[in-house]
Length: 240
Length: 228
Length: 157
Image (cartoon, rainbow over all chains, first blue to last red; front, side):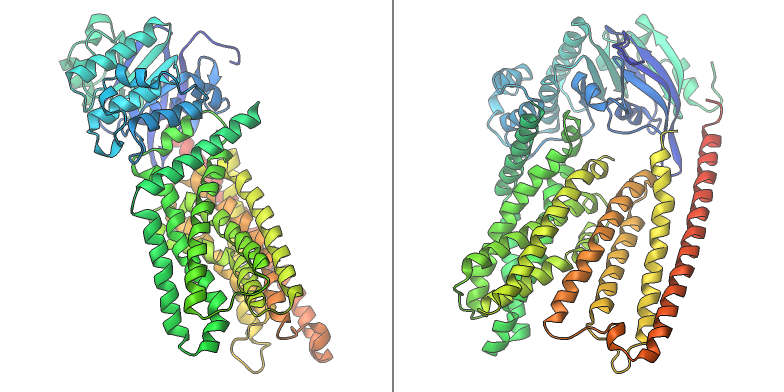
């Protein structure tokens, strides 16, 4: 699949191990433009690993994946131009100011340094633009990471537990960004521990158990808190 | 215009490293302090007789710079690992070698400054007379510093991500730097004692060859080593 | 599988480790030729010592990296750099020595020893080549077994 495909994410049989332990045992899924998909699962189920494979941070041991038609292993740079990735850790330079962190990102991306103050304002950090990141709370660092991610002008958002450490205002900002990308024809894949903050945003929720996709829920059911049926799936005896 | 993009990335990364190190307070000052301390200890170990000190001056200065330098090299990647900044860094599209090149420039600046201070202190402590051939000496020191920085930075990219970074970097680096140390110390000694310009020339040529070979080798190998 | 590149590196680095073992054995054997002193800063001896130290660093790196793919990549780089450095180390140590002493070579040794020295050197080389080939094959087999085990673990995809 070389030409620009119509799928935001097309993953086939992605498998990945660390040492002797297989974290992903053949994950296949597809996300279309305009979709916001949630990926749920217990700790250690491989959700973060899968996201990092899509973000080109990890190479899969087996299987293949394409982001808008670009192979994540062979056309990694093309993938990176379209993807906004938010990790657990903010990955900021603590001795630089918020504005300097953004300026570094802008220059690395080849973007002009104008409009960075506006980006900070959008995530509610305009008042600390000249402060060093070292003093920031986890929520503030998250917001700055979000502002940096938007500099890419991504068509696909890969967010790892995006609502962690955010207060209500932060959650609103996060959802606004996701909505903006979706409305512009992009897509988003969210790794989630709990579904409540994403209420109303998700089109689908996929559940990952033991490195494989075990369940899928659509529509309004996707935005409900974890149902008894999902909990049943999480136990070894459960099966659909 | 891929070249201009690459050069911009190199410049931006070098600026970022220099700025974060300058502001960290812990870094550069302690590295220099350590180098001077080591120099003084060498003085105790080798002196107090003036001639013995003069003979050992070149060796003591380079070893002090080396031992303190390994701290600087690990730190240049520490800043990326501390808050997980290495991941966003790898996600900017573009050539990977630019990351190494930027860090090489920043480390060359720091090691160069440290070496300058080490030389000033060393020349005083070890009672060395400044020779007529001091421009050649300067060139020799610059070339030797490049040799240190190139392999030091490259190996630190790996060692800083392992469990035993403090001991692994010296273990990997020191044997590989034997040619640099021999060339720099023997060449410095020759120039400081004012004789055999012929000898120093050969050492300088060796350093030039070493620097060119390993700058090229590290820039080529870096992208394979930086990905997880 | 996406691992063919890494697959090649593992047996190669095992072969390199065997080379290092031979370097150490050669060092010990070289003592047999030293008549008067336990250690002398002779060019070949010293270079071999430095090479051995480079090898120790290589082993240390391998022991601290768990992920096989990363270990293969890093070993390849460090091994290649060590190999590039071999002639440079030798040249620099030799220049360092020639200022003070002439090094011992076949032309400076008693002719009675020359034949023995040369025969031993060739024999050593042949043995080393044989062992390295066997080690390489063994490592390839081990790697193939590992890959089969991986495929089994993923089974039913």
